[in-house]
Image 1: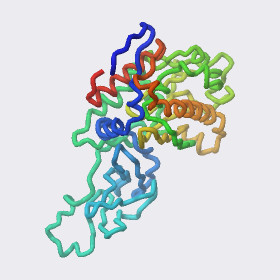
Image 2: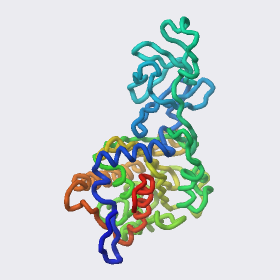
Image 3: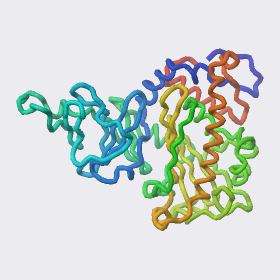
Image 4: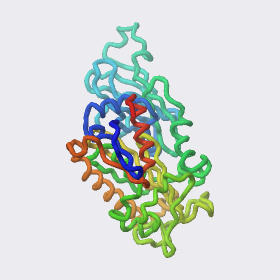
Length: 375
């Protein structure tokens, strides 16, 4: 990053090209998204053997499915014969196997090649060696995390470690029982902005008083630009007359049983690099998963998770969902407002971060370190 003469109150952002250049984005795909643990799908989306979802991880399409033994498997979504994509839909279910629509090479739910035209006449073809290419899988917080690297980094250090860094320990997030919560609502957003702009936006609240009237009503400290994520273990406290994390401050739904008194009436936000945001409140959990598709386009899949009995009885989730849906729309519109200027000569050297945003500089250093660039 080019050095700049700035007053002590300000530090530089990344140069604009880091948000607009497709060459930089291609490097990020290889060095970040295809090399790190990536949160792919909610495990409950794969309800029974043969259920599958396809997700874009860097430059690769990944096929995630539940095998016959109940385990979750992931494979590159590529037929080993001539490279056809096995499944083009986002989700679905097969009975016993994945069959390529081009030449009918067929793979079982464990990825083994089990059939192909004239395969019996080719006894030298190893059914495992010519099976689907496996992708590493872990389950945590009720989600399936995948890693395309041949030698994956430590999940405990890179994923769980982000939670420990933010909350001070792993135990506090365990109180929310995220694995056992049910998806009460899911909204998918197509954001015309670079993924890093979304991360930076989520990490700071300098903008909150400007664009988040509903959120600052519920969390008054956010109106002062308080960056909760820059303080270990801090949860933003609900306002005095606020009864729940809802769009109008009304009562929410049943509190998650494990949430302690010290976590009640508080909101915690966690960034798990490179593409997950976790939001914890007493009666539900909101998880964002980003799928960067281009330098200027990011799909965000947002889940609102509640107790199973709350979802099962058809409780009114509207006020709870509406609050953060509005926050999402407000944030994403702000990021889309920034994106066109990333290629401007006015932003060639980047922008600046005020003191309440200085912690974002550590994120920029992390990006540069992953890309092998000099800071």
